[in-house]
Length: 158
Image (cartoon, rainbow, N blue to C red; front, side, top):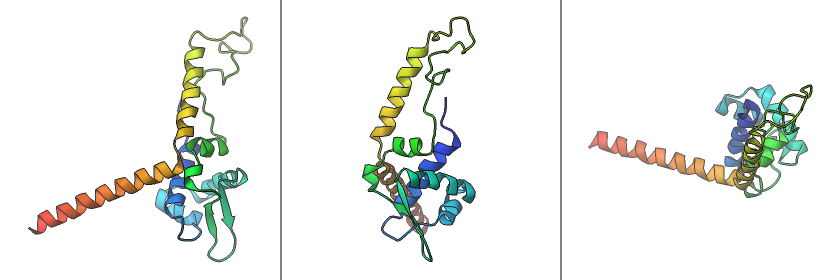
């Protein structure tokens, strides 16, 4: 089980958008260039995010997208669910017919509870991480990289 590119791209694009809040609407073409995600794919994802009231679109010159609510009120689970990303580690898609709908027993596999519990833990975890948490992590990472670059430049000059 793994997240598809849909979920990964949606979260990445939302971090990009959230990092630019307060500077006016963010264009999808800008996100596309910065994150190397197809513009048409972003349009599909943001249509879903808009319908789930996670982002809002601003039309006209200087238009683009902005968050519909504060970044600390949007969770990773909200984003992934909005773009229809399945979060399911079970073999049966949660239908409890792990051996197939046609199988004589149509019963759960022996590890069904394990994977069902993992599903719950994944959703709980993703619901505990806000978009603001991810923005803060990215800003911290960028600040640390800048310190390393400044330190190396200073050392090279000295």
